Image (cartoon, rainbow, N blue to C red; front, top):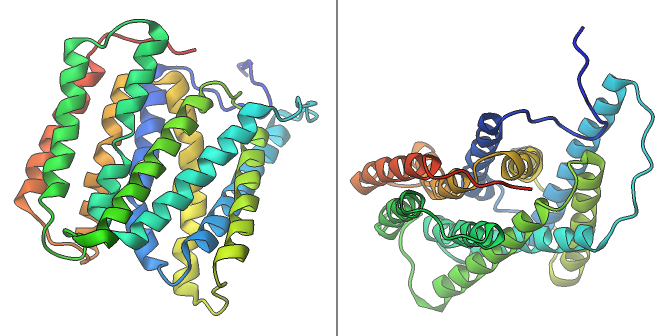
Length: 310
């Protein structure tokens, strides 16, 4: 049997292709969030955040223990949680809370667009770290992807995912932008944290505890919730705010930063498509055009110069 250089708590990614694939899977999971949130709309945002993050902690802990069992190794003495861990938990908490609050305050399509403008900041951070400007092909690809997503979502004037006006809608966009900024901070920190599932479970737990405190102070707990509502809430914790976080962290570490940044712009497309299939959004011709633009943009970004991540 081939011997792998496997460390407990670490999921091995041996190629950039696999890193890109995992990043893409995370994007697909995030695209399902607006639909899942609508299915669990009876649960207040902070309560849902608490439930989702603790579910993510349980899933991550289970993977952590399973990995230790498979290699038959004793748990390692993990270094004490440092500043990066607490900052990651704070950014994670902000990203989830602001996003759920934004979905409750504005239309899902436009809110998702505003939130997922943050990869522009990620691309800028990568370029600053490498000390060079992005290439023309990569820049054009990212802009094309962004333009495609903007075309789809800014044309959403009909249906439940449609336009919004007034202070209520503007507040939703502000919350979405705040969520995006937190996502950017969390993604940057992921590059500095070790690929340790136990450590990530710790981050989820800290963020979940913070959300729980905020919920008890600011919200009334929804106690009588049906199984039809609890199921999507559990799926949010297992997928978009559990496995997707782990997949995205590894994608950032091993995948192509330009491609992953461009792929993030497909989140609004995925979200709107799922809402259409569920009958909660009206299909638009602009959406098909935008999907082509986003796909072409992601391809162009992936063909740009490689950037080393460390």
